[in-house]
Image 1: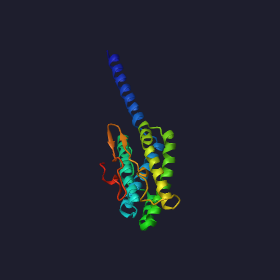
Image 2: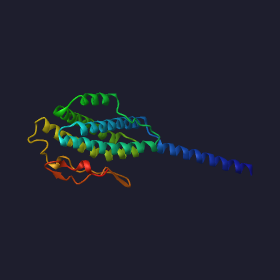
Image 3: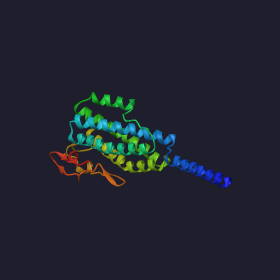
Length: 220
């Protein structure tokens, strides 16, 4: 009888240990994955702060609209990453790193068209790096949840990259036509999807030659 009791207890202990091991495998995030998440969180926070600066400082309405778009869309992606990290017990930075602070201070010292050109050039450089890093991460990340977030976010980064390149080229007079007269297709409507809900829904891109798009008034 005692042998049967001990055997039952052993089975229960081993079963619990096996369950704990399985849970650890499900929730554990590798150091490389955590490093990418931390870097993405810092970069996303920087894009939001720089976007706020551009929305308040830029003299060109299209640049202001682009800055506001960075606030909304990077803010939404950051919130998704933070929520994902919380489920895995990963603590992410909430503020931009020192390198991003240096960039912010440099841009904050500029005014007028000089600021607009410098900001858009910085957005090109930032998103060139971001797209490359996210493309690498889409195959290198091991955690399924983090990889899904990377794959979901990558198209938005590519769209930011495309728009930033276009606007930067126009302001550098490498493309014809004034920025204010740019086609509304330069700032297309974007929707970020997450399971069971939609974040950062934009309007359909209503265009008026006097005021530009209506992105700034869309629901978030």
